[in-house]
Image (cartoon, rainbow, N blue to C red; front, side):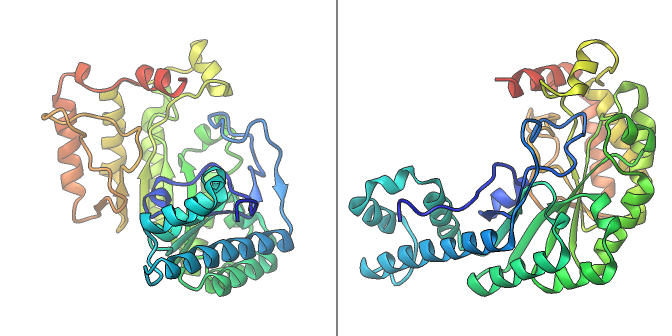
Amino acid sequence: MSKLSFAVGVYRPPSEGGSGSLLLRVTENCPWNKCTFCEMYKDHSFVYRSVEDIKTDINTVRIIIDEIQEVARKVGQEGRINRDVLQALLSVNPYLNENHCFSTVFSWLYYGGKTAFLQDADSMIMRPLELIEVLKHLRKTLPTLTRVTSYTRSKTLSQRKLEDLKAIRESGLDRIHVGLETGDDEVLRIIRKGVTSAEQIEGGKKAMAAGFQLSEYWMPDIGGRERWRQNAENTARVLNEINPHYIRSRPFVPRCGTPIFDDYEQGRMHISSPHERLEELRVMINNLNVTSSVCFDHSMNVWANRQSGLLFRQDYEGYKFPEEKSLVLELIDEGLSIDEKRHVHVQDLIAISSL
């Protein structure tokens, strides 16, 4: 088992880490890879993996599962996966501790073996029939799965036929995460997102109509101090049209090595202060008319409350709108009432991310 391996990428949404999702790489890197703010795949070319390679990886996961569960039965755990099982495995083969794929599967089983996340940046770029074949094999091979999730792009969704999206959904892909970033067309062009707000709306509506659970991510301050209001207002406009299940805040932080970081360093883009970001957030939230859950489940949502804790709770379910919209607005007002020095500034976040 120490020599068994399958393709595992690095990136996944925070909510997939929280649920202990099994990570499976169905494509490698990003097929677009031109966004000026993103450093994740910049030095890597996109790889379209074959169905057979992906199915082989899934079969490898099954082999590792079976061997772990066999040991669990032998040590009297009746199939339960716990530390005793891990110790039994390592006592026979200590090199397992160095096998990332073994650790991935063991951790997945330890946390219940219920969810999987298909990597990398845009799994929906796969040909629909091929993705369907992969999903059916995944569900058949790992029958304990209750949720399968993936990243995709608004552009890709807008280009897919609704009947294909429905077939993909029915084959076992439950939730998709989309990096909206902004709904403002000027900002979209500046950050080279490769999509228009109209395409974002079309793609989001198709995803909802196909029956996916949809998470849309937006970036407060991605337009900088120069375009904060249009970023907020047009993002709300697009999200109102889509009305996704989840809206997740990912405050913008310039990453070293990206084009937008150069713009920031050379003074072509000015980052907003913590209070200015809250003002932008207030405009966006105030303009939202949705039945979504609005979430602050990312470490960059670092505004402080009066007790010096986090202003927003960072759970994965967030605040239910419209019921808790007034609460979120009250929290924003609380953040604005606090001395700005008590909030974490973006410059500090840049320094941390560069370590």
